[in-house]
Image 1 (spheres, rainbow, N blue to C red):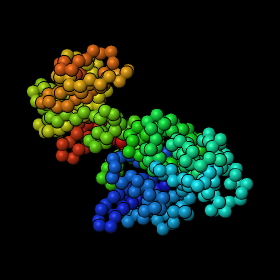
Image 2: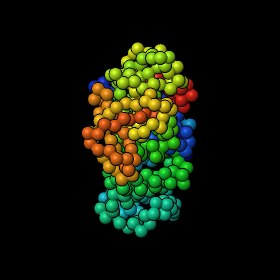
Image 3: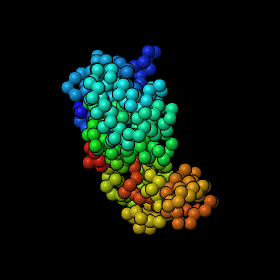
Image 4: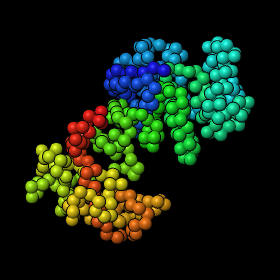
Length: 378
């Protein structure tokens, strides 16, 4: 296996469309890295440049100790698994998995050993004589992964490999890919638009938007300490609540004001954001950090906003509450399913003030991160 290094990689398509801009990343040997972002953000283009299927306009790509910018895809010593599986319909599972090795003129005994070993790892030994049309979606995906495994490449590249599977099978295959990575100790670059895949699979997550890297960090760091409003809003289901307002100085404290309502910032956050007093900012709070009773730092009503329930979504162990806050600002919160909530009910929502974020309305940057969190988030 090997590390993969991208230095200031840029891709400009004919006509001037910039798909990827100044992408730099050091992917460590045996690391599982996930590129995640909305459609059109440049994640698949980045992967295809590593694979050699797209040529980088500028920048350097290294796999192991080699610069591979001018190396053909077949000589880069990587294996790629595609969204559509790309299996040969006229070949059996065995022949599909063996095909790449046969092209490279591996000895027949070595081909057989590798194919059967990969089939055993993936639990598809009984499928070897079937053709792709006789396989389920999950089985086809296992065959595609097996075809990559037999290559024993320096790095595996996955381009949204689970997007054609149903929800239940996606969950099963995520766990299977994670186990496979632990077993093979491989370097993996994985592209997805699915945040659940990114959070569960990646050692680190690379969040992209409009061709640029927004944040690179372990999944929980990206979730807990987003560097900007885009990252904060992209990760999380339901998405983070964004409440427009302003910071005001009040009775020796700093408060966030929305309309006539006030919530008081914790002292450490107040010190970090004091320079924004009197300015418009946006408060971000995740649905799980809003409660129906006070579990925050402050006594009384210093972290309370009034709201009116609009929609209740029961989900078994929890319920999603859609409400209208001050100035009709939409608020979404997660509550225990046993809390009785009805449509049109007035609901005082309590914010966990040690978990909120504040975003600069001009730059979108998270101005509430502590220095150690800023270091963690990059």
